[in-house]
Length: 82
Image 1 (cartoon, one colour):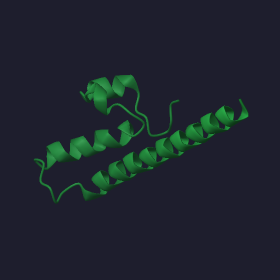
Image 2 (cartoon, one colour):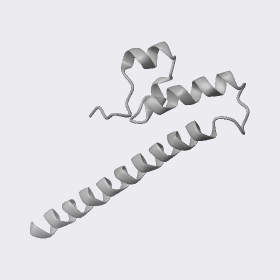
Image 3 (cartoon, rainbow, N blue to C red):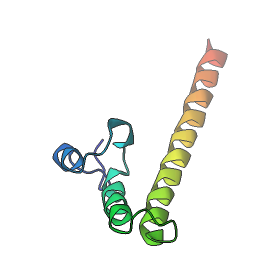
């Protein structure tokens, strides 16, 4: 399930990304964190990186919700057939 937006485990370990943040958008999190450290976490900096990461997270959320709806519909159809 590796996508083009997933960083390798070696990259994530080298950048010290916590395990809970190692998801499908992890390759966008690395440059965001580098930018944040470089700019001392100024909230008006790193807008492009933050927007790209948040959009990836939102798209992943929508994909998971569509998949959940599909699974729920399949379960209902199987229950109706039984």
